Length: 179
Image 1 (cartoon, rainbow, N blue to C red):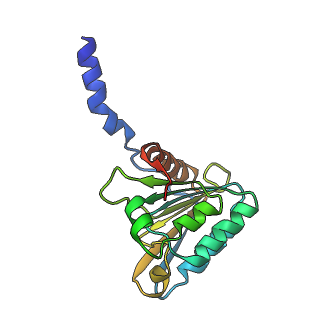
Image 2: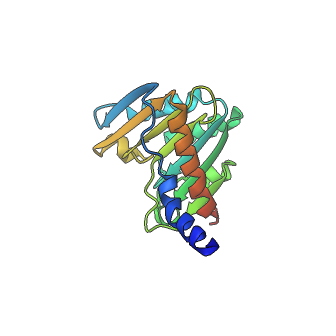
């Protein structure tokens, strides 16, 4: 009987992880590049961070965004990054090494063929959390050359918690930065 219960629990575990609908609350900002200034919106959002920023990046080569994260770190904001290892190590424009050298903890996602998330969570456990997501890579090209979208969702604590829980699940499977 115990084996049957364990088997049933194992089969149901993935379904239990699914969140289902979350409440619609807070505000939504939408940017479409190259027409809208998505990078400017990201810079303002990073500049407003007070406690923490969790980054999930497929690729990261925007000097402006790297500078803003460095400034946030200097202000005492805790920053952690997950990134696709292949993009971080083989893309000649990647700034992941520079971010790590600036004291930002970085982990490489290696479990997946492509760690393709593009997420920033700002003050995710605070009273006014921000979730940034969309197709927008954290690159110059995403703003200037590509057709991308960026969504900034503010003030939805259950959504921020879901994204932070997912970020932490990915972090558990990631490996520490190494050159």
